[in-house]
Image (tube, rainbow, N blue to C red; front, side, top):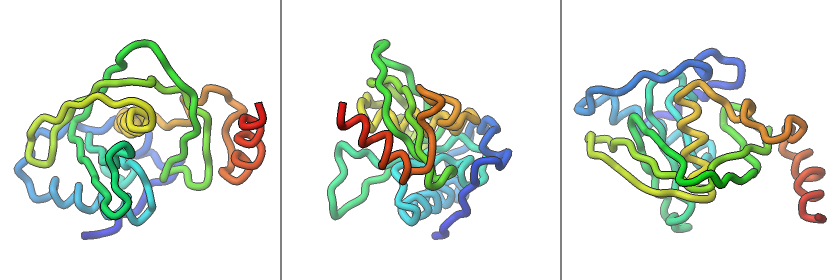
Length: 176
Protein backbone atom coordinates (compact mmCIF):
# COMPACT_ATOMS: atom_id res chain seq x y z
CA UNK A 1 0.00 0.00 0.00
CA UNK A 2 1.09 3.53 -0.74
CA UNK A 3 0.04 7.00 0.27
CA UNK A 4 -0.49 8.89 -2.98
CA UNK A 5 0.23 12.55 -3.68
CA UNK A 6 -2.88 14.74 -3.76
CA UNK A 7 -3.31 17.06 -6.75
CA UNK A 8 -3.96 20.61 -5.56
CA UNK A 9 -6.13 23.37 -7.01
CA UNK A 10 -4.46 24.64 -10.17
CA UNK A 11 -3.21 21.25 -11.38
CA UNK A 12 -4.72 20.46 -14.82
CA UNK A 13 -5.57 16.84 -13.89
CA UNK A 14 -8.38 18.23 -11.71
CA UNK A 15 -10.02 19.87 -14.74
CA UNK A 16 -10.03 16.79 -17.02
CA UNK A 17 -12.82 14.27 -17.46
CA UNK A 18 -11.82 10.85 -16.21
CA UNK A 19 -11.78 7.93 -18.62
CA UNK A 20 -14.11 4.99 -18.17
CA UNK A 21 -12.72 1.72 -16.80
CA UNK A 22 -13.46 -1.22 -19.10
CA UNK A 23 -11.32 -3.97 -17.58
CA UNK A 24 -11.97 -4.87 -13.95
CA UNK A 25 -9.75 -7.95 -13.83
CA UNK A 26 -6.49 -6.09 -13.31
CA UNK A 27 -4.16 -5.91 -10.38
CA UNK A 28 -3.55 -2.24 -11.15
CA UNK A 29 -7.23 -1.37 -10.54
CA UNK A 30 -7.19 -3.18 -7.20
CA UNK A 31 -3.87 -1.57 -6.22
CA UNK A 32 -5.19 1.87 -7.21
CA UNK A 33 -8.30 1.46 -5.05
CA UNK A 34 -6.28 0.17 -2.07
CA UNK A 35 -3.79 3.03 -2.42
CA UNK A 36 -6.62 5.57 -2.72
CA UNK A 37 -8.14 4.12 0.45
CA UNK A 38 -4.88 4.42 2.37
CA UNK A 39 -4.47 7.97 1.09
CA UNK A 40 -8.00 9.03 2.05
CA UNK A 41 -7.57 7.62 5.56
CA UNK A 42 -4.14 9.24 5.94
CA UNK A 43 -5.57 12.63 4.94
CA UNK A 44 -8.65 12.08 7.14
CA UNK A 45 -10.99 12.45 4.16
CA UNK A 46 -14.52 11.21 3.65
CA UNK A 47 -14.20 10.77 -0.12
CA UNK A 48 -11.57 10.72 -2.84
CA UNK A 49 -11.66 10.66 -6.63
CA UNK A 50 -8.94 9.27 -8.89
CA UNK A 51 -8.15 12.68 -10.49
CA UNK A 52 -7.22 13.92 -7.01
CA UNK A 53 -4.34 11.42 -7.01
CA UNK A 54 -3.26 12.33 -10.56
CA UNK A 55 -5.22 9.57 -12.33
CA UNK A 56 -7.73 10.55 -15.01
CA UNK A 57 -9.93 7.51 -14.35
CA UNK A 58 -13.58 7.21 -13.32
CA UNK A 59 -12.99 5.85 -9.83
CA UNK A 60 -14.21 7.22 -6.50
CA UNK A 61 -14.05 5.92 -2.97
CA UNK A 62 -16.03 7.17 0.00
CA UNK A 63 -16.92 6.54 3.59
CA UNK A 64 -20.64 6.29 4.28
CA UNK A 65 -21.24 8.48 7.33
CA UNK A 66 -24.65 6.85 7.91
CA UNK A 67 -23.30 3.37 8.65
CA UNK A 68 -19.80 3.94 9.92
CA UNK A 69 -18.77 2.67 13.32
CA UNK A 70 -16.21 4.44 15.46
CA UNK A 71 -13.80 1.50 15.54
CA UNK A 72 -14.13 0.50 11.89
CA UNK A 73 -13.93 2.59 8.73
CA UNK A 74 -15.98 1.21 5.86
CA UNK A 75 -14.84 2.37 2.42
CA UNK A 76 -16.87 1.86 -0.72
CA UNK A 77 -15.14 1.99 -4.09
CA UNK A 78 -17.25 2.91 -7.12
CA UNK A 79 -15.93 2.50 -10.64
CA UNK A 80 -17.70 4.39 -13.46
CA UNK A 81 -20.23 5.92 -11.03
CA UNK A 82 -23.37 7.75 -12.09
CA UNK A 83 -25.95 9.58 -9.98
CA UNK A 84 -29.34 11.13 -10.59
CA UNK A 85 -31.35 13.39 -8.32
CA UNK A 86 -34.50 12.02 -6.71
CA UNK A 87 -36.59 15.16 -6.80
CA UNK A 88 -35.75 18.83 -7.07
CA UNK A 89 -35.06 19.49 -3.38
CA UNK A 90 -31.60 20.92 -2.70
CA UNK A 91 -29.73 22.09 0.34
CA UNK A 92 -26.77 24.37 0.94
CA UNK A 93 -23.98 23.14 3.18
CA UNK A 94 -20.27 23.69 3.72
CA UNK A 95 -17.79 21.56 1.79
CA UNK A 96 -14.06 21.16 1.84
CA UNK A 97 -11.78 19.20 -0.43
CA UNK A 98 -8.44 17.45 -0.07
CA UNK A 99 -7.35 19.24 -3.27
CA UNK A 100 -8.17 22.64 -1.75
CA UNK A 101 -6.80 22.20 1.78
CA UNK A 102 -7.82 24.57 4.53
CA UNK A 103 -10.67 26.10 2.52
CA UNK A 104 -14.46 25.70 2.64
CA UNK A 105 -17.34 26.83 0.52
CA UNK A 106 -21.12 26.85 0.76
CA UNK A 107 -22.37 24.52 -1.98
CA UNK A 108 -25.87 23.66 -3.17
CA UNK A 109 -26.43 19.94 -3.79
CA UNK A 110 -29.39 17.66 -4.36
CA UNK A 111 -30.73 16.44 -1.05
CA UNK A 112 -31.55 12.90 -2.22
CA UNK A 113 -30.01 10.91 -5.08
CA UNK A 114 -29.79 7.43 -6.51
CA UNK A 115 -26.43 6.23 -7.70
CA UNK A 116 -24.78 3.22 -9.21
CA UNK A 117 -21.35 2.05 -10.20
CA UNK A 118 -19.26 -1.07 -10.03
CA UNK A 119 -17.17 -2.59 -7.28
CA UNK A 120 -13.57 -3.75 -7.57
CA UNK A 121 -14.70 -7.01 -9.25
CA UNK A 122 -17.12 -5.40 -11.71
CA UNK A 123 -20.31 -6.17 -9.74
CA UNK A 124 -22.96 -3.47 -9.94
CA UNK A 125 -23.67 -1.45 -6.79
CA UNK A 126 -26.89 0.58 -6.60
CA UNK A 127 -28.05 2.71 -3.72
CA UNK A 128 -30.09 5.69 -2.61
CA UNK A 129 -28.43 8.37 -0.53
CA UNK A 130 -29.43 11.58 1.18
CA UNK A 131 -27.84 14.23 3.36
CA UNK A 132 -24.08 14.04 3.78
CA UNK A 133 -23.86 10.67 2.01
CA UNK A 134 -25.52 12.16 -1.10
CA UNK A 135 -23.31 15.26 -0.89
CA UNK A 136 -20.11 13.19 -0.82
CA UNK A 137 -21.17 11.12 -3.85
CA UNK A 138 -22.04 14.25 -5.85
CA UNK A 139 -18.79 15.98 -4.86
CA UNK A 140 -16.63 13.02 -5.87
CA UNK A 141 -18.44 12.39 -9.16
CA UNK A 142 -17.97 16.08 -9.99
CA UNK A 143 -14.21 15.45 -9.76
CA UNK A 144 -14.56 12.79 -12.48
CA UNK A 145 -16.05 15.45 -14.74
CA UNK A 146 -13.34 18.03 -14.00
CA UNK A 147 -15.63 20.08 -11.74
CA UNK A 148 -14.45 21.49 -8.40
CA UNK A 149 -16.88 22.57 -5.68
CA UNK A 150 -15.70 26.16 -6.08
CA UNK A 151 -17.70 26.34 -9.33
CA UNK A 152 -20.87 25.31 -7.46
CA UNK A 153 -20.85 27.88 -4.66
CA UNK A 154 -24.36 28.97 -3.69
CA UNK A 155 -22.94 32.37 -2.70
CA UNK A 156 -19.71 33.65 -4.25
CA UNK A 157 -18.80 35.29 -0.94
CA UNK A 158 -19.27 32.03 1.00
CA UNK A 159 -15.79 30.69 0.31
CA UNK A 160 -12.66 31.08 2.36
CA UNK A 161 -10.21 29.69 4.83
CA UNK A 162 -11.76 27.15 7.16
CA UNK A 163 -10.82 29.08 10.32
CA UNK A 164 -12.46 32.27 9.04
CA UNK A 165 -15.55 30.42 7.79
CA UNK A 166 -16.04 28.79 11.20
CA UNK A 167 -15.46 32.05 13.07
CA UNK A 168 -17.62 34.33 10.94
CA UNK A 169 -20.02 32.50 8.61
CA UNK A 170 -20.98 29.47 10.68
CA UNK A 171 -21.28 31.43 13.92
CA UNK A 172 -23.46 34.00 12.13
CA UNK A 173 -25.71 31.22 10.78
CA UNK A 174 -26.11 29.78 14.28
CA UNK A 175 -27.15 33.18 15.65
CA UNK A 176 -30.00 33.43 13.11
